[in-house]
Length: 293
Image (cartoon, rainbow, N blue to C red; front, side, top):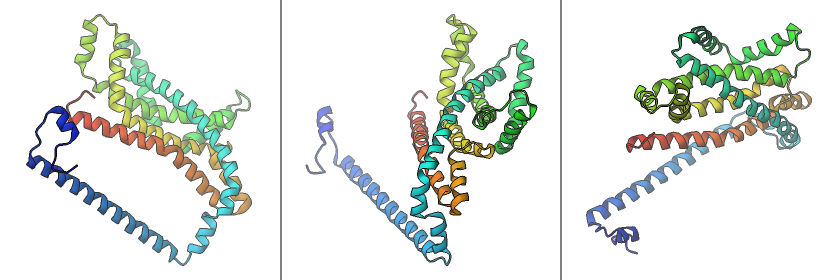
């Protein structure tokens, strides 16, 4: 079909496409092709420069042998992958725990009930303190402090690490949720109450759904960060992917197992990073088009 002719969609709608519009379409197509070509060329040039810079470095042969050895990659992969399953199990439990605890904290902080004033103070102090403590320090405090009390006997390091992850990230997620709750216009609550909904029903059916749509990109970023920080439980002795890599390195004196662990964590994070980018772009387009977010 000639590019100057109307498209089938145009004919189906009965639209008459002017020559000016066709010219604009051809120009936009040309600009898109030009942008793609420039992007590919710049990417190839950048990759070539990086590869040449690495291979021409005096120490590259030793670095390649120490960090990118195919032999040690294959040998350590099963053990590191087995450790990753522990990270995944902890992540699932931590996500559920953070979701519940953070939601409760956010609801307490946004409540105006005078009876909950002491809990609001505690929640405020909690979020302030926990966001100021580095995660690895919190892991040490929980992982070695709770067993030091001698109240519960021996506790699995994975359990202690999960508790620390939940306590730490609940503070961050609670603040994100609180911002979302406060961003819902008061008229939404007033309208729901005027229809006969109780305060609890208004929060559950009106406020929370709207707030979650607004803060979903931020929540996804927190989730991606949590995926990485789950690997810090290795400092407590839990044999996860990072700890398994450390054991392999200690026996072989080759750092390739760390690269294996890094690649596995990247593969675990990439789908959620792409999902977060897609959803953020979707929200942006809906806002620009005047749609309901």
